Length: 174
Image (tube, rainbow, N blue to C red; front, side, top):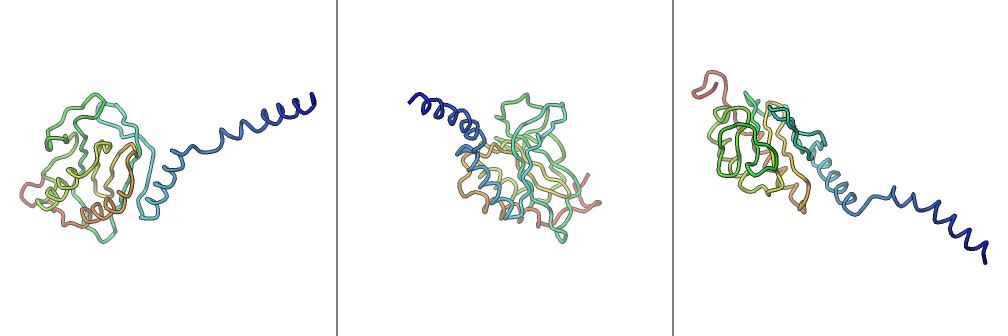
């Protein structure tokens, strides 16, 4: 009987580290979410968002690449949710929930501003930053409460990227 006890203890000691390798239920959900994003053509990165003041926001960036035939935006925008739990860099208010910390509102056409404002109003509070440049549109978020939102985000992002852009020389373009 004593040998059986020692064999059981040895088996537990050998097999217990294997449980550390197994992904947790939360990690499994994130893997499924990121795989769904990949299938939609969304690039997911875990690089922090670096702000002008040197601070970094940790989260997942979901990036939509501008299709080759889509118009190129002439500038760069970075919006930050006002209630983000980091030191807020200076910037101008975008609306009641968001602040423009980099870029200019004048880069966008009226149609782009309206579509972006509608999307910002729909985004959950765990989305804390948005970047829009000539090549990509990106959301930073903590990936919680993610049930079935990717297809609608994908559709909205693709529609935003397809909207006509201002050209150098147009009024209000700087």
